[in-house]
Length: 149
Image 1 (cartoon, rainbow, N blue to C red):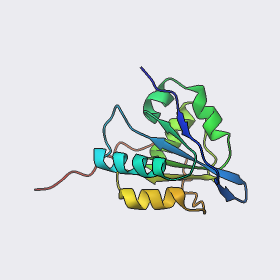
Image 2 (image 1 turned 135 degrees about the vertical axis):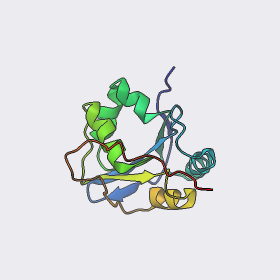
Image 3 (image 1 turned 180 degrees about the horizontal axis):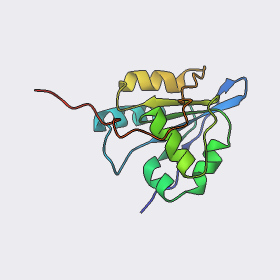
Image 4 (image 1 turned 90 degrees about the horizontal axis):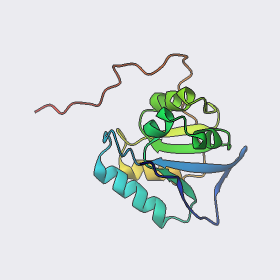
């Protein structure tokens, strides 16, 4: 069962030279590769802010279904996405025939960054595009860091 994007309403969206910057939060329900605490903290702080955002259960699942919502998101102007690796997010959208604009997309990696760093970037007025420029799909070597005893 999939969830539709939920939107929190805002009075003051961030504005860039290209228009308002949207925020997309992925809860990564199925792969469970992001710390529960990080996801919980980022989502709580987004809800507590006065910024509008879309929250989806799982971008991977949406991409596998080629959900039309991904096209709306990719064509809607500047966007900040809280999910996982920028390259992975780029290829999820591309594989769903909804390529992201490299110049107007910032992906925040909740696998590697702290919840505080993620929320700071999401709520920042400036956009720092960071999609990789290569033309290659994600590499198998992009695996989660293993804890060493």
